Length: 269
DNA sequence: GGCGCATGCTCAG
DNA sequence: TGAGCCTGCGCCC
Image (cartoon, rainbow, N blue to C red; front, side):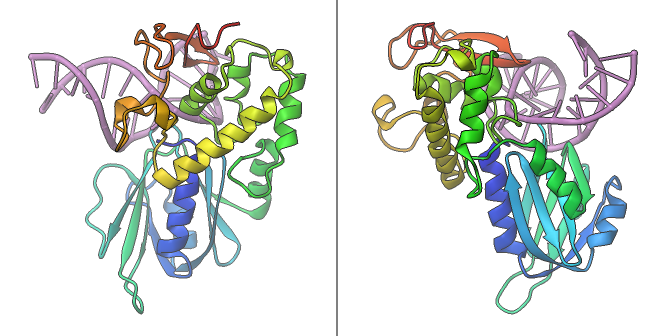
C-alpha cells in the first residue's frame, strides 16, 4: 500500500537488510539493465524516503530512485534468490557475510526505477512539499500553502508539492477525523485547522510506519483487540455504509481524479 | 480460476 | 482528459 508510510518502512528495511553490504544488482526483465549494471558490486551506503519516493544510495555517489506508483511492490527474501517470477525490474541481493544471512529484494511494477545523481535527487526534493515523516519537514510550508489556496482541501492533500506522502486513504481519513468538509477551500478553513491536519497526519503516518498498515479509527470507535481490515477506516471505501460515529451513509465522489469518501453529517459544510 | 478494482503519477493529445 | 504502467487483492464462480 504505497502511501508515504510504506516508503519510509522500505527505506528502513533496506538500511537494515542491505546497508553496508556489497550488493549484486540485476534487471531480469531488462528495463533497468543499464542502471542495475552501474550499481552492481557497489555498497549500499544510505537509504532515504521523501513522500512516496525512495532512494537507495550506493558507493560512488549513485542513487537508485524508485517510485512505486499504484502497482509497484518490493518482495523480500532470505538466502539465495529464487528464479525471478513475472516482470522483475530490479533485483538486489547480498550473499551471507559474517553473522548476516543472504538477502534479496525484487522490484515489480514500479512507475519509476532510475539512476539519479545528487542533482537529480535534489530536483525531486525541491518539487515535493514537506513530508511529516522527515526530520527536515517544515509544517509552515504546508499550512501557509493551504491557507492561501482557493482549491478544495481534499484536492490540496493529494498534491505532493503541498504535502508529500499523503495518498487517497490518508486524505479521506484525516478530513473525517478533523470533521472537515472536503470541498471547503483551503483559505476557508477554520483557524488552526491546517495546523491540526498536519499534526494529525504526522501521527497517522507514524502509526502507519509502526504497523505497516493504515489504521485511522480511534480505539473508542472500533471493537477491541486486533484491528480487522473492515474496522481500520472511518470512511475510505465505505460508500453507503453507516458512519461509525453518527450512522449517516458514507458518501463518495471523484475529486482530484480519485475517489473521495466522507460523512455528509460529520463533515458538513 | 477469472474479473475488476486499487494506495499514483506521467505523458500524449 | 484519458491511456499506460502491469501487480496484488478481494470477490465471485
